[in-house]
Image (cartoon, rainbow, N blue to C red):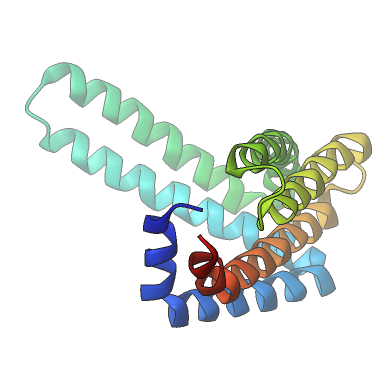
Length: 184
């Protein structure tokens, strides 16, 4: 791990520990209540898209360049429509998000596995990053194998598992970064 990263971890240790604990708790809550977590995740995303779309539409009219106005306006309208569709029918939104999330987990898992080998095989965090990547990749494959039947609970459960592993990884890295710096 580079000394810049370790320096940042040392400066922000308390915040990183708090963030780790929050991620672990949120992950566990999502695992215990996957249907609720799926709907909440979907509705939050719907609101983000709707508000983001409205902001983009307003911003498009503030643009001085004609081409930018139309591009931003169209993108803003699409965001707002997507957000409204999700808010009006969260179950359909959950199905769509499950398909997107399955793809995202596959890509994220592959990238994490690649990153593990870039960190340095045999290094202190290699196994942790590799495990995170393998688990995330397997989750993505399982999403697609069970789609669409389990979509209503799958998204909450898998987001919970992913958040839990991310929180645990961050906590271990934060708590051990000082010792790693002393070794090198």
